[in-house]
Image (cartoon, rainbow, N blue to C red; front, top):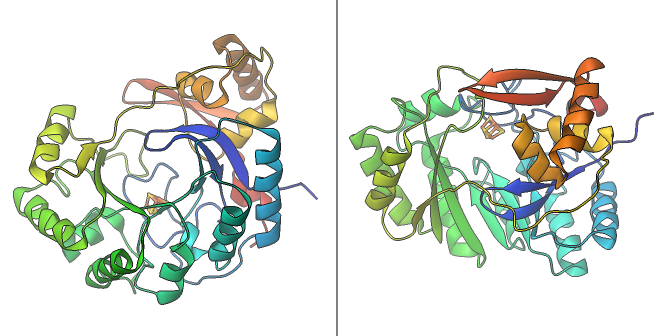
Length: 318
Ligand code: SF4
């Protein structure tokens, strides 16, 4: 049986720096089906929490990686689906916090924060990064295409409750799609909601990668910066990642390239940064993977992206 890796990267995160990704959900199991999702469409939206992958195996893999590698800024639960769907998330965070001083972050869509067990699972994380893209139920339906049993009002209440209980950093991301959630009415309501939640940061983003629905278009950088002023002191436009240093190896393994590209599409430059490898080594590996039909390329907004045919979901039995 094929060995499954639950970790990927480290990858250059626009928000967190050099992040070791931990992927505990089969692709693409999620509560939402966002039009801008860079992982493609959600075939089946789920709400059920369970141990989708073995909790102890995940903990062991992260520990083993950290024992052999330095320079990781943060361990980040994210990846192929919604991490709070995993019922062992709290145990994983707790075990890692006991073992390492490297901060632990969770990137979540925040839709399950109305549940007490989910809020409890996240309490020990250093940074929780929920998203909130809509201020009205109608826009929530349009941009996030939620599971039918999810409602925006309950999600917003969950976020407020979590803020009251959680002592770590809460960074809420709002991703804007042109013509969908950027009207004056919507942004004004969003500002009020965020005011009530009281996060440490409000991070403004737009469609920067190939989206599930190609009709999802980004806001201009200028518009995003105007919104930054509108949302006030705590808000920031998420910038592009600039790596602090590079390494050396002139050879990279195809498996390293596949491990990154099965989670998300990347340009050649992003892949070089992610793997901290010289352009030539990355290109040689990519060309051979394309030739072997393990990776394909496509163009989005004038940039060439590469993605693996094989996904984590192919390697997992759910
Ligand atoms: S963007 Fe995140 S929350 Fe939305 S469908 Fe994709 S994985 Fe789920």
